[in-house]
Amino acid sequence: MRPLVAVIIICLFTFIPAFAQETYDPAFDPPPPGVGSPTGGIRWNGAIGAVIIDGKVYQQFSLRPDIPLGKFGIGLDLTFYFDEDGQLREEDWDEPFDIVEKIYYIRYGLPGDPFYARVGALDGVTLGYGIIMRHYSNAIQYPAVKRLGIYTEGERDRIGWQAMLNNLREIDEPGLVGCRLSYRSPVAGLTFGGTIGYDGNQYAGARDADNDGVPDGLDWFDGVNDFRRRDELYNLLSDAEIRQLIEWGHLPDITSPPQNYKDLKDGIAIIGADAGLPIWRKRPLSIWLYTQAAQILDYGWGFAFPGVTVGIGPLKVGYEFRHYDSQFLGDYFNFVYEIERVRLVGDSTYVPKEAMLKGLSRADGHYADIMLYIGTLAYVNAWYLDMHGENYSAAKTFYGEAGITPAFVPKVRKVSGYFMQPNVERLFETNTDGTIYGTKVYLGLASNVTLVYDHRITYWNGEAHRSVRIETMMTF
Image (cartoon, rainbow, N blue to C red; front, side):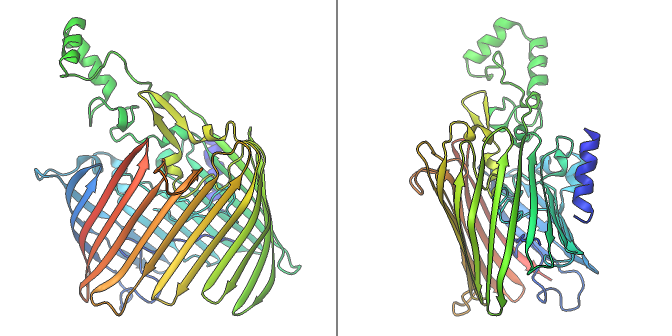
């Protein structure tokens, strides 16, 4: 295991074109260039308000400084949640690693620089042209679940690289890791790339707040180790007494324990190759042709050809024709992968995303995307995949996001909304696992005071999970 971890670290931080994009959220992320502190010093965000986590309302107080240190930048999320009794949400502060998780990000440079790296929350990570990893986010369940990831990209001497790790807590598994190496030839800018994505244990995606091996959806006793509490009860009570308490509803059925998911392990690996050629690069028009292919080890393969991306000023559109052989799924590590990674079915069955591959037939279809920025006024970002096969249930995936900064509406600084639904036969009809949608509204109360309303619905394990954040954000 140690040699594998060493390889991951080397892959992440040695000199390995990059096409990653990060979504700017002014409530958390640093401001775009030129928007920060006029003195070039620390930019402070403070916030007070309310948030709903797992159906429970908390009052929150937070400080979110962005600290520039030359080419480095550090963003902290020092947030305290208090319940209706004024008690601090202890699971955010009861482990030494929790202190590390207060780092929302550490960055060096900016995307597009010869070297860029970020530690913390990752948003919109795409490796190469995306057939393996597209718009991956490790912050999809934030703030209920916080992951400390690593991402780096850059280019040196025609060698380009991208590399990522989803969560430092999972480095021993390892967790989800991805790496892409590319070579930009001197012949017309023709670029070749190779990508690998690997999740060392899909079961590590089970959400387990008290870390006892029983996912939250099956937990007998919140905040304590279920198996240890069960043993304590059997030492104190007889079998007959325990059965009676269960019958009366005073105890969960501790006679039928769920399987400890920590005893399960199942990894999945995907390898791929791509080639791209810029055929026109004179502003305001750019045209890029490419092809990409991938193989899910022990399963099927797929490819996209032709692929084309056209940019005209602020507008970028893309198209691919795709073919999937049996037991293949493109964009496997996607925006909602941390939700799809493992699902809980019934009372004790854990189903990794890998199970979706079994039984999938060959399929052909189309992928298209669009990105439009109208100055600072509005933006649209969307992509759509539609595959057709005789026995291909994972047929359609859609992601759409739009926002507007309506200068003509007093006090409204920004309004945005987003929707995603992955791998379904029919879009919008039912909210399947991985469906996520929400809205954000930013109201200016003063020059440096903003009221933020953030409402998100996320579906996993067949249930809707609502997260609401209402806070007053102060910049000083």
